Image (tube, rainbow, N blue to C red; front, top):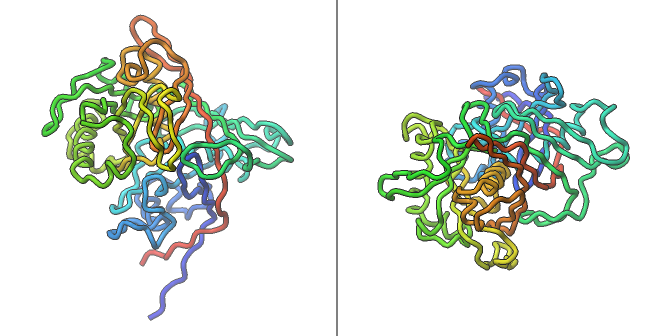
Length: 394
């Protein structure tokens, strides 16, 4: 019995921040996959190697973690004043699910570089040497992101001496600005969907928790570490090897999602794994990061641990960092309280792999908070480029 050959699709495998993913130009996808829907999802699932009951994604490009099971589709922007339209998919590992409900802040760091290198930015806007400002439209959250990409001899500069905790080797620094990140365009939600800086969140089997529910970068539920019996210095093993703990966090996430108006019933959370995120915060304490590098209490303003796709993240999601920076800038939130209270425009927090610095410009008017800009530095690098091969569907 003969079988058809695999198809091949132009693609680039990139690291952005502390994540990796497969990047595509929209025009390079098969015609049926050039529009959102079932055909696109089936194709991208096969590219990544999901669903995989073994949980390893051996027969695909995925790395069997939430940080490495990602896809990005890019095209020249149809929106005035922007260079590129950016759509991100979080691919489930053991389910036939591509979650398009939010952004990936880490892979955002690679969008500008890919766009420049793949003809999605007008050549006249690319300097021979210097910084190329790439104007990104994130279609899912309907937000503008600005990437400042270094260019040398007309090409994206990827090598450099910028070090990012959670990434082993240094690279060139890419500065990212998230403009007006607090209004979730697709959901239409306010920065604080309940109208409160802190809520009492009733979670069956857990109790009533103090929680800050915020839409900034990505919908996020913040709770206090001590309310769950943690001190905020936990590394991945302490959470991910504890099935009971993971179940508790998923229950918190589901009930928080209902409270935020993202879903109508907790049962819907299983089909919306990417958002919202759930994170726990604590006051500074000295600890050893996952690499063994010490993080002194005096080097950070607070500690944050966050879960992504049901597991504790090895570092920090870029979009969650936006939420952290925003909440830290607003007096009264749990994040701000853990950081010592008061007004601030910059926060440095400790995560499992080290530390991260985030700037946020937040303003209050007539009792309402707005955030105009959140910024951070990341790095990005092409790991491989060419074609991915995908079996033809029977």
